[in-house]
Length: 258
Image 1 (spheres, helix red, strand yellow):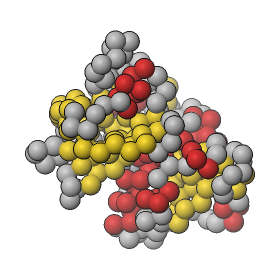
Image 2 (cartoon, one colour):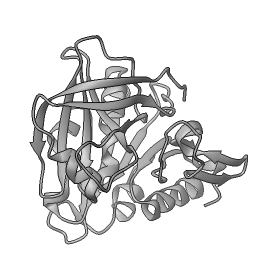
Image 3 (tube, one colour):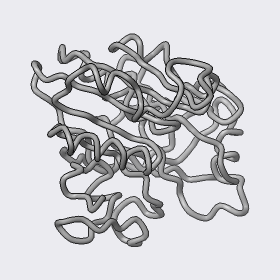
Protein backbone atom coordinates (compact mmCIF):
# COMPACT_ATOMS: atom_id res chain seq x y z
CA UNK A 1 0.00 0.00 0.00
CA UNK A 2 2.43 2.59 -1.26
CA UNK A 3 1.81 6.27 -1.86
CA UNK A 4 2.79 8.17 -5.00
CA UNK A 5 3.63 11.74 -5.90
CA UNK A 6 0.52 13.83 -6.57
CA UNK A 7 -0.01 16.34 -9.36
CA UNK A 8 -2.42 19.22 -10.01
CA UNK A 9 -3.63 18.78 -13.58
CA UNK A 10 -6.18 20.32 -15.93
CA UNK A 11 -7.57 17.26 -17.69
CA UNK A 12 -9.72 17.31 -20.80
CA UNK A 13 -13.05 15.52 -20.70
CA UNK A 14 -13.00 13.24 -23.75
CA UNK A 15 -15.98 10.98 -23.11
CA UNK A 16 -19.05 10.99 -20.88
CA UNK A 17 -21.50 8.14 -20.60
CA UNK A 18 -24.65 8.00 -18.50
CA UNK A 19 -24.90 4.59 -16.82
CA UNK A 20 -28.30 5.31 -15.30
CA UNK A 21 -30.17 8.24 -13.76
CA UNK A 22 -27.68 8.49 -10.91
CA UNK A 23 -24.26 7.55 -12.28
CA UNK A 24 -22.05 9.00 -15.02
CA UNK A 25 -18.76 7.57 -16.27
CA UNK A 26 -16.31 10.32 -17.23
CA UNK A 27 -13.02 9.83 -19.08
CA UNK A 28 -10.22 12.39 -19.06
CA UNK A 29 -7.07 12.84 -21.15
CA UNK A 30 -3.90 14.89 -20.83
CA UNK A 31 -1.46 16.01 -23.50
CA UNK A 32 1.38 14.72 -21.32
CA UNK A 33 1.67 11.18 -19.93
CA UNK A 34 -0.51 10.76 -16.88
CA UNK A 35 1.28 10.03 -13.59
CA UNK A 36 1.37 6.43 -12.36
CA UNK A 37 -1.80 5.53 -10.48
CA UNK A 38 -2.67 2.48 -8.40
CA UNK A 39 -5.95 0.78 -7.46
CA UNK A 40 -7.52 2.39 -4.43
CA UNK A 41 -6.13 5.87 -4.97
CA UNK A 42 -8.40 8.84 -5.59
CA UNK A 43 -8.59 12.34 -7.04
CA UNK A 44 -9.69 15.62 -5.49
CA UNK A 45 -11.80 17.22 -8.19
CA UNK A 46 -12.42 20.97 -8.37
CA UNK A 47 -16.03 21.79 -9.13
CA UNK A 48 -16.59 24.79 -11.39
CA UNK A 49 -19.97 26.34 -12.11
CA UNK A 50 -21.60 25.40 -8.78
CA UNK A 51 -22.09 28.44 -6.50
CA UNK A 52 -22.86 26.21 -3.50
CA UNK A 53 -19.75 24.05 -3.87
CA UNK A 54 -16.60 25.48 -2.30
CA UNK A 55 -14.45 22.42 -1.74
CA UNK A 56 -13.03 19.78 -4.05
CA UNK A 57 -14.81 16.44 -4.18
CA UNK A 58 -12.92 13.19 -3.52
CA UNK A 59 -13.65 10.61 -6.24
CA UNK A 60 -12.11 7.17 -6.62
CA UNK A 61 -10.00 6.45 -9.66
CA UNK A 62 -12.14 3.97 -11.56
CA UNK A 63 -9.68 2.94 -14.26
CA UNK A 64 -6.58 4.04 -16.13
CA UNK A 65 -6.30 3.29 -19.84
CA UNK A 66 -2.54 3.58 -20.36
CA UNK A 67 -2.72 3.12 -24.13
CA UNK A 68 -5.14 6.05 -24.49
CA UNK A 69 -3.57 8.07 -21.66
CA UNK A 70 -6.98 8.28 -19.97
CA UNK A 71 -8.15 8.26 -16.39
CA UNK A 72 -11.77 7.38 -15.60
CA UNK A 73 -13.94 8.45 -12.71
CA UNK A 74 -17.39 7.19 -11.81
CA UNK A 75 -19.56 10.07 -10.60
CA UNK A 76 -22.61 9.54 -8.43
CA UNK A 77 -24.87 12.58 -8.62
CA UNK A 78 -25.84 13.11 -5.01
CA UNK A 79 -25.42 16.86 -4.48
CA UNK A 80 -24.88 20.20 -6.20
CA UNK A 81 -21.18 19.52 -6.72
CA UNK A 82 -21.41 16.13 -8.36
CA UNK A 83 -24.42 17.20 -10.43
CA UNK A 84 -22.45 20.19 -11.72
CA UNK A 85 -19.48 17.96 -12.52
CA UNK A 86 -21.69 15.53 -14.41
CA UNK A 87 -22.92 18.40 -16.62
CA UNK A 88 -19.41 19.21 -17.87
CA UNK A 89 -19.21 19.29 -21.65
CA UNK A 90 -16.90 17.19 -23.82
CA UNK A 91 -13.68 19.14 -24.38
CA UNK A 92 -13.90 21.09 -21.13
CA UNK A 93 -11.01 21.10 -18.68
CA UNK A 94 -11.45 19.79 -15.13
CA UNK A 95 -8.83 20.51 -12.48
CA UNK A 96 -7.81 17.51 -10.36
CA UNK A 97 -5.22 16.64 -7.75
CA UNK A 98 -4.16 13.03 -8.28
CA UNK A 99 -3.27 10.40 -7.39
CA UNK A 100 -3.93 10.74 -3.67
CA UNK A 101 -3.91 8.19 -0.84
CA UNK A 102 -2.54 4.69 -0.74
CA UNK A 103 -3.47 1.59 -2.68
CA UNK A 104 -4.61 -1.98 -2.17
CA UNK A 105 -1.91 -4.54 -1.50
CA UNK A 106 -1.24 -7.17 -4.15
CA UNK A 107 -1.74 -10.82 -3.15
CA UNK A 108 0.41 -13.79 -3.99
CA UNK A 109 -0.48 -15.48 -7.32
CA UNK A 110 -1.84 -18.59 -5.59
CA UNK A 111 -4.18 -16.72 -3.25
CA UNK A 112 -7.94 -16.91 -3.78
CA UNK A 113 -9.20 -13.35 -3.98
CA UNK A 114 -12.69 -11.87 -3.62
CA UNK A 115 -13.56 -8.26 -4.46
CA UNK A 116 -16.83 -7.04 -2.90
CA UNK A 117 -18.41 -3.76 -3.97
CA UNK A 118 -21.67 -1.96 -3.35
CA UNK A 119 -23.07 1.07 -5.16
CA UNK A 120 -20.42 3.56 -6.27
CA UNK A 121 -18.00 1.58 -4.11
CA UNK A 122 -17.43 -0.71 -7.09
CA UNK A 123 -15.39 2.08 -8.73
CA UNK A 124 -11.86 1.29 -7.40
CA UNK A 125 -12.41 -2.46 -7.75
CA UNK A 126 -12.40 -2.36 -11.56
CA UNK A 127 -8.85 -1.07 -11.71
CA UNK A 128 -7.80 -3.52 -8.98
CA UNK A 129 -9.39 -6.39 -10.87
CA UNK A 130 -7.53 -5.41 -14.04
CA UNK A 131 -4.20 -5.32 -12.20
CA UNK A 132 -4.80 -8.71 -10.58
CA UNK A 133 -5.85 -10.16 -13.93
CA UNK A 134 -2.68 -8.85 -15.55
CA UNK A 135 -0.66 -10.53 -12.79
CA UNK A 136 -2.52 -13.81 -13.37
CA UNK A 137 -4.28 -13.75 -10.01
CA UNK A 138 -7.73 -15.38 -10.35
CA UNK A 139 -10.39 -12.86 -9.36
CA UNK A 140 -13.97 -13.26 -8.15
CA UNK A 141 -16.20 -10.17 -8.02
CA UNK A 142 -19.27 -9.89 -5.81
CA UNK A 143 -21.22 -6.74 -6.67
CA UNK A 144 -24.40 -5.48 -5.06
CA UNK A 145 -27.01 -2.82 -5.74
CA UNK A 146 -30.63 -1.95 -5.06
CA UNK A 147 -31.87 -3.18 -8.43
CA UNK A 148 -30.56 -4.48 -11.76
CA UNK A 149 -30.32 -0.99 -13.24
CA UNK A 150 -27.97 0.07 -10.45
CA UNK A 151 -25.35 -2.60 -11.17
CA UNK A 152 -22.46 -0.77 -12.79
CA UNK A 153 -19.87 -1.73 -15.43
CA UNK A 154 -20.70 -5.45 -15.34
CA UNK A 155 -19.40 -5.92 -18.88
CA UNK A 156 -16.02 -4.53 -17.87
CA UNK A 157 -15.78 -6.50 -14.63
CA UNK A 158 -16.52 -9.71 -16.51
CA UNK A 159 -13.37 -9.18 -18.61
CA UNK A 160 -11.18 -9.66 -15.55
CA UNK A 161 -12.86 -12.36 -13.48
CA UNK A 162 -15.99 -14.23 -12.46
CA UNK A 163 -18.85 -11.91 -11.52
CA UNK A 164 -21.61 -12.62 -9.00
CA UNK A 165 -24.32 -10.09 -8.17
CA UNK A 166 -27.00 -9.35 -5.62
CA UNK A 167 -29.90 -6.90 -5.73
CA UNK A 168 -32.14 -5.88 -2.87
CA UNK A 169 -35.26 -6.35 -5.00
CA UNK A 170 -34.10 -9.60 -6.63
CA UNK A 171 -34.15 -8.16 -10.16
CA UNK A 172 -30.65 -9.50 -10.87
CA UNK A 173 -28.45 -12.09 -9.24
CA UNK A 174 -29.40 -13.32 -5.78
CA UNK A 175 -31.90 -11.31 -3.78
CA UNK A 176 -30.48 -9.57 -0.73
CA UNK A 177 -27.20 -7.96 0.26
CA UNK A 178 -23.74 -8.95 -0.95
CA UNK A 179 -22.96 -10.20 2.55
CA UNK A 180 -25.78 -12.74 2.15
CA UNK A 181 -24.65 -14.22 -1.17
CA UNK A 182 -24.36 -18.01 -1.22
CA UNK A 183 -20.79 -17.89 -2.51
CA UNK A 184 -19.68 -16.82 0.96
CA UNK A 185 -20.91 -20.18 2.27
CA UNK A 186 -19.61 -22.37 -0.53
CA UNK A 187 -16.25 -20.92 -1.60
CA UNK A 188 -13.05 -20.31 0.36
CA UNK A 189 -10.99 -17.14 -0.02
CA UNK A 190 -7.59 -16.04 1.26
CA UNK A 191 -8.07 -12.31 0.81
CA UNK A 192 -10.99 -9.90 0.46
CA UNK A 193 -11.00 -6.32 -0.81
CA UNK A 194 -14.12 -4.22 -0.38
CA UNK A 195 -15.53 -0.75 -0.92
CA UNK A 196 -19.06 0.56 -0.50
CA UNK A 197 -21.47 1.77 2.18
CA UNK A 198 -19.98 1.58 5.68
CA UNK A 199 -22.53 -0.96 7.03
CA UNK A 200 -21.66 -3.24 4.11
CA UNK A 201 -17.93 -2.93 4.71
CA UNK A 202 -18.42 -3.54 8.43
CA UNK A 203 -20.34 -6.72 7.64
CA UNK A 204 -17.61 -7.85 5.24
CA UNK A 205 -14.98 -7.10 7.87
CA UNK A 206 -16.90 -9.18 10.41
CA UNK A 207 -17.19 -12.08 8.00
CA UNK A 208 -13.47 -11.89 7.24
CA UNK A 209 -12.54 -11.83 10.92
CA UNK A 210 -14.72 -14.86 11.72
CA UNK A 211 -13.12 -16.83 8.88
CA UNK A 212 -9.54 -15.67 9.37
CA UNK A 213 -9.38 -13.91 6.00
CA UNK A 214 -7.15 -10.92 5.25
CA UNK A 215 -9.43 -7.99 4.47
CA UNK A 216 -8.77 -4.50 3.17
CA UNK A 217 -11.41 -1.79 2.92
CA UNK A 218 -11.41 1.50 1.05
CA UNK A 219 -13.01 4.02 3.40
CA UNK A 220 -15.26 6.78 2.14
CA UNK A 221 -14.94 9.31 4.97
CA UNK A 222 -15.75 12.93 4.16
CA UNK A 223 -12.62 14.57 2.74
CA UNK A 224 -12.10 18.25 2.08
CA UNK A 225 -8.39 18.70 1.39
CA UNK A 226 -7.08 15.25 0.44
CA UNK A 227 -3.66 15.89 2.02
CA UNK A 228 -4.28 15.48 5.75
CA UNK A 229 -4.52 19.18 6.62
CA UNK A 230 -8.19 19.77 7.46
CA UNK A 231 -8.68 16.73 9.75
CA UNK A 232 -12.30 16.17 8.72
CA UNK A 233 -11.66 12.58 7.60
CA UNK A 234 -10.05 11.34 10.84
CA UNK A 235 -10.69 7.70 11.75
CA UNK A 236 -10.04 6.22 15.19
CA UNK A 237 -7.96 3.05 14.80
CA UNK A 238 -6.01 0.69 17.04
CA UNK A 239 -2.92 2.65 15.97
CA UNK A 240 -4.43 6.01 16.93
CA UNK A 241 -6.31 8.67 15.01
CA UNK A 242 -5.36 8.83 11.33
CA UNK A 243 -6.35 10.96 8.35
CA UNK A 244 -8.05 8.62 5.91
CA UNK A 245 -7.09 10.79 2.93
CA UNK A 246 -3.40 10.51 3.78
CA UNK A 247 -2.96 7.19 5.64
CA UNK A 248 -5.78 5.54 3.70
CA UNK A 249 -8.24 5.33 2.10
CA UNK A 250 -7.25 1.65 2.02
CA UNK A 251 -6.82 0.08 5.44
CA UNK A 252 -6.52 -3.44 6.77
CA UNK A 253 -9.60 -4.15 8.87
CA UNK A 254 -7.39 -5.39 11.71
CA UNK A 255 -6.62 -1.77 12.63
CA UNK A 256 -10.23 -0.56 12.49
CA UNK A 257 -12.38 -0.37 15.62
CA UNK A 258 -15.39 -1.98 13.97
